[in-house]
Image (cartoon, rainbow, N blue to C red; front, side, top):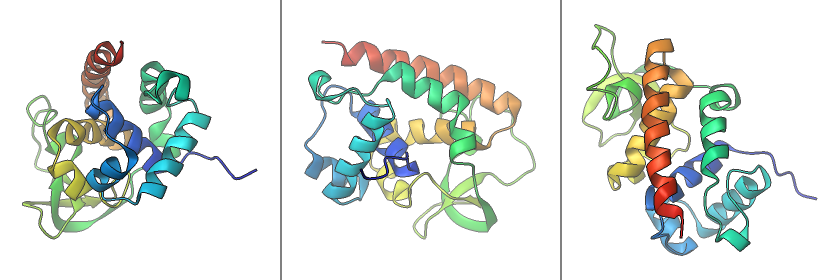
Length: 181
C-alpha cells in the first residue's frame, strides 16, 4: 500500500475546499486555481481523506471541519513548522496580512512574507504550505485569509496564535454551516 502520510500541500488543498464552500469545482478546475496538476490535487484529496481531514465520497469529499480545526490548532506547527529565511520581496502572511494585520499590534520587526517576485511587500521569508500559494492566494481572498491564519498558527507568538485560533474557529464554523445540505 502506498504511503498515505499527510503532506503540507494536502492542508493547502483542504483549505481551498473550505474557501470554495459548496461551490466546489472539478479537480481540473481546482488544480488550475491552486497552480497544481490534477493528479497532485487528487493525491492530496486521497491523503486528506485517509487522515480524516476530508469526509469520504459518500459525503461528497467535503472537508471534515472539526477534524481540520483540531489539526490546524494543535498539530500544524509540529507537522509543518515554518522555515524562516532572509529579507525578501513577497506576499504578506501571518500577522502581516488580513485578517490579522488589523488585529495584532504592529512591531518594528519585518513582517513574514512568502517569497514571490511579483509580491508588493518586503519582509522575512517564510515557506508557504505549498510553493504555489502566492499566485493562488492572490486570486482568491477567502483562501488567502485561511492560509494567513494557518501560517499564524504555524509561526506566531502566543498572542498571535490565540487571535488566529479565534478567527479560524469563526470562519470554519461559517464554512461548516454553508457545507451542510
